[in-house]
Image (cartoon, rainbow, N blue to C red; front, top):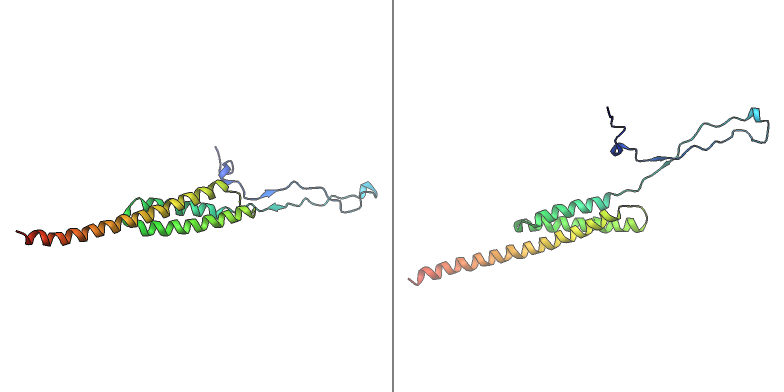
Length: 146
Protein backbone atom coordinates (compact mmCIF):
# COMPACT_ATOMS: atom_id res chain seq x y z
CA UNK A 1 0.00 0.00 0.00
CA UNK A 2 1.43 3.33 -1.04
CA UNK A 3 1.07 6.45 1.09
CA UNK A 4 1.24 10.04 0.02
CA UNK A 5 4.78 10.16 1.43
CA UNK A 6 5.91 7.99 -1.51
CA UNK A 7 4.40 10.36 -4.10
CA UNK A 8 6.97 12.83 -5.49
CA UNK A 9 4.26 15.49 -5.78
CA UNK A 10 4.20 15.68 -1.98
CA UNK A 11 7.94 16.19 -1.68
CA UNK A 12 8.94 18.97 0.70
CA UNK A 13 9.75 22.33 -0.86
CA UNK A 14 12.99 22.71 1.09
CA UNK A 15 16.28 20.90 0.87
CA UNK A 16 18.07 19.87 4.03
CA UNK A 17 21.84 19.95 3.88
CA UNK A 18 23.71 17.08 5.56
CA UNK A 19 24.81 17.92 9.09
CA UNK A 20 28.47 18.66 9.64
CA UNK A 21 29.97 17.47 12.94
CA UNK A 22 30.84 20.41 15.13
CA UNK A 23 32.95 20.01 18.23
CA UNK A 24 31.88 21.82 21.36
CA UNK A 25 35.41 21.61 22.73
CA UNK A 26 38.70 22.05 20.99
CA UNK A 27 39.56 18.80 19.12
CA UNK A 28 43.24 19.13 20.03
CA UNK A 29 42.48 18.63 23.70
CA UNK A 30 41.77 15.33 25.39
CA UNK A 31 39.80 13.20 22.86
CA UNK A 32 37.65 11.73 25.63
CA UNK A 33 36.20 15.13 26.47
CA UNK A 34 35.22 15.94 22.90
CA UNK A 35 31.47 16.13 22.49
CA UNK A 36 29.75 16.48 19.17
CA UNK A 37 27.15 19.22 18.89
CA UNK A 38 23.68 18.17 17.80
CA UNK A 39 23.23 18.25 14.01
CA UNK A 40 21.72 21.41 12.57
CA UNK A 41 19.41 21.49 9.55
CA UNK A 42 19.78 24.36 7.09
CA UNK A 43 16.87 25.06 4.78
CA UNK A 44 17.36 26.41 1.26
CA UNK A 45 14.47 28.36 -0.26
CA UNK A 46 13.22 27.19 -3.61
CA UNK A 47 12.79 29.73 -6.41
CA UNK A 48 9.27 31.04 -6.85
CA UNK A 49 7.60 30.36 -10.18
CA UNK A 50 4.25 32.11 -9.76
CA UNK A 51 4.60 34.83 -12.41
CA UNK A 52 5.27 32.44 -15.29
CA UNK A 53 2.45 30.10 -14.29
CA UNK A 54 0.01 33.01 -13.86
CA UNK A 55 1.01 34.38 -17.25
CA UNK A 56 0.38 31.00 -18.88
CA UNK A 57 -3.03 30.57 -17.20
CA UNK A 58 -4.18 34.09 -18.12
CA UNK A 59 -2.96 33.57 -21.67
CA UNK A 60 -4.84 30.28 -22.04
CA UNK A 61 -8.05 31.81 -20.63
CA UNK A 62 -7.70 34.80 -22.94
CA UNK A 63 -7.00 32.64 -25.98
CA UNK A 64 -10.09 30.53 -25.28
CA UNK A 65 -12.21 33.67 -24.91
CA UNK A 66 -10.60 35.09 -28.06
CA UNK A 67 -11.95 32.22 -30.13
CA UNK A 68 -15.45 33.64 -29.57
CA UNK A 69 -15.59 37.12 -31.12
CA UNK A 70 -18.23 38.47 -28.74
CA UNK A 71 -15.84 37.74 -25.84
CA UNK A 72 -13.04 39.82 -27.33
CA UNK A 73 -12.90 42.31 -24.44
CA UNK A 74 -12.25 39.64 -21.76
CA UNK A 75 -9.74 38.01 -24.11
CA UNK A 76 -7.90 41.29 -24.53
CA UNK A 77 -7.93 41.95 -20.78
CA UNK A 78 -6.68 38.47 -19.88
CA UNK A 79 -4.01 38.68 -22.55
CA UNK A 80 -2.72 42.03 -21.28
CA UNK A 81 -2.70 40.82 -17.67
CA UNK A 82 -0.93 37.62 -18.71
CA UNK A 83 1.62 39.62 -20.71
CA UNK A 84 2.32 41.79 -17.67
CA UNK A 85 2.87 38.76 -15.47
CA UNK A 86 5.03 37.21 -18.18
CA UNK A 87 7.28 40.26 -18.33
CA UNK A 88 7.52 40.14 -14.53
CA UNK A 89 8.51 36.48 -14.82
CA UNK A 90 11.18 37.34 -17.40
CA UNK A 91 12.59 39.94 -15.02
CA UNK A 92 12.67 37.38 -12.21
CA UNK A 93 14.45 34.94 -14.54
CA UNK A 94 17.10 37.53 -15.33
CA UNK A 95 17.59 38.22 -11.62
CA UNK A 96 17.95 34.45 -10.95
CA UNK A 97 14.92 34.49 -8.64
CA UNK A 98 12.93 32.00 -10.75
CA UNK A 99 13.78 28.94 -12.78
CA UNK A 100 10.71 28.28 -14.94
CA UNK A 101 12.01 29.70 -18.19
CA UNK A 102 9.88 27.48 -20.46
CA UNK A 103 6.62 28.21 -18.64
CA UNK A 104 7.32 31.95 -18.60
CA UNK A 105 8.12 32.11 -22.31
CA UNK A 106 5.06 30.01 -23.15
CA UNK A 107 2.97 32.32 -20.97
CA UNK A 108 4.20 35.40 -22.83
CA UNK A 109 3.57 33.78 -26.23
CA UNK A 110 0.06 32.58 -25.33
CA UNK A 111 -0.75 35.98 -23.80
CA UNK A 112 0.31 37.77 -26.98
CA UNK A 113 -1.88 35.31 -28.92
CA UNK A 114 -4.80 36.17 -26.62
CA UNK A 115 -4.28 39.90 -27.26
CA UNK A 116 -4.20 39.31 -31.02
CA UNK A 117 -7.35 37.17 -30.87
CA UNK A 118 -9.03 39.86 -28.75
CA UNK A 119 -8.23 42.59 -31.27
CA UNK A 120 -9.32 40.41 -34.21
CA UNK A 121 -12.55 39.60 -32.33
CA UNK A 122 -13.22 43.31 -31.81
CA UNK A 123 -12.72 43.94 -35.52
CA UNK A 124 -15.10 41.08 -36.41
CA UNK A 125 -17.79 42.34 -34.02
CA UNK A 126 -17.42 45.92 -35.29
CA UNK A 127 -17.71 44.73 -38.89
CA UNK A 128 -20.82 42.69 -38.00
CA UNK A 129 -22.44 45.70 -36.31
CA UNK A 130 -21.67 47.91 -39.32
CA UNK A 131 -23.09 45.29 -41.68
CA UNK A 132 -26.24 45.05 -39.54
CA UNK A 133 -26.66 48.83 -39.69
CA UNK A 134 -26.24 48.79 -43.47
CA UNK A 135 -28.75 45.95 -43.87
CA UNK A 136 -31.28 47.70 -41.63
CA UNK A 137 -30.95 50.88 -43.70
CA UNK A 138 -31.39 48.90 -46.93
CA UNK A 139 -34.61 47.27 -45.67
CA UNK A 140 -36.35 50.64 -45.69
CA UNK A 141 -35.09 51.42 -49.22
CA UNK A 142 -36.20 47.99 -50.48
CA UNK A 143 -39.80 48.33 -49.27
CA UNK A 144 -40.19 51.89 -50.57
CA UNK A 145 -39.37 50.94 -54.18
CA UNK A 146 -42.39 48.64 -54.60
